Image (tube, rainbow, N blue to C red):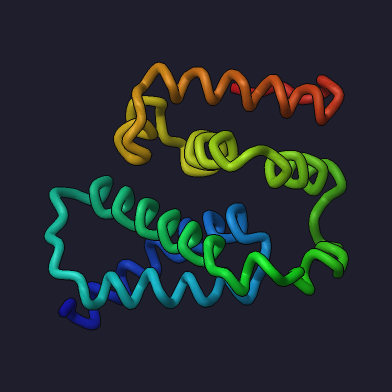
Length: 161
């Protein structure tokens, strides 16, 4: 079990990453909070020792993605409709940001993961390949295909790195 200081440091350092990843996968605030608690509880109870901060961050990303996938596979989840999907999105988002965010949310899961890790977490393709356990060339292909899909959805008005 980890010390209180280590847990507080991890929450400060990775809470935004875990929440954003959950929102991309689940599109639901309540489920995001559930997974957030689950991920940090696993961290508290885990005896894994990390080589460095990047290894620790990769662990949080992998555990978060797996927890989201487990929740989405749940029988009851597949038979319900989220109230958040019925309600409007928060008004404080700019129209351009909202449009891009909706386009990213509408991507197939395999594209959504690489787009999130590359553009929101600033990981390189080789780093993403290690995190997701996929070939580097596969990551480059997924990034290119996701850019094409986003360009079509957004009307070609947006430029990507």
